Length: 142
Image (cartoon, rainbow, N blue to C red; front, side):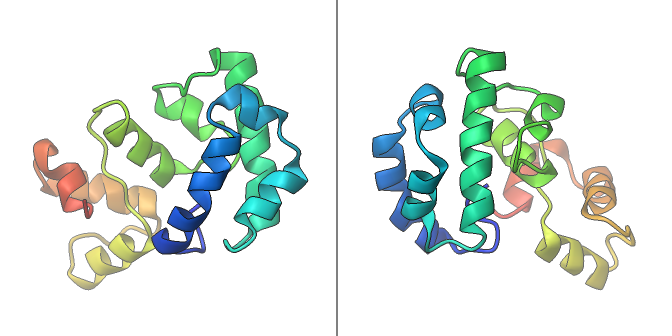
């Protein structure tokens, strides 16, 4: 969520302070959006991300007891969480088979003739068909 339109280096700069002030969903939900935005201001799209972080935290508390849900559908219903982010969470946090595809993988798969999908979701399906399940996350760049 924070890495969209930003770099991992910048995300790694802001997360220590953000997570120190909001170590769990309840404390993050209680933070003012302006405070979250102040902390993450160096990231692209900081105002939108700050609103999404706070609202997502509120929903995690209200609907999931402060825990991150372990289903694609539930994750993708959270503000600021798209299919790629949901795939990363499902794979890394819960050990589910997932194949995160971003625009770069989508473009390369098309260039290499591995997919002619018009969307990252179609490219994901094409690559899942081509590659054995045990390689999915490694193949996606980990």
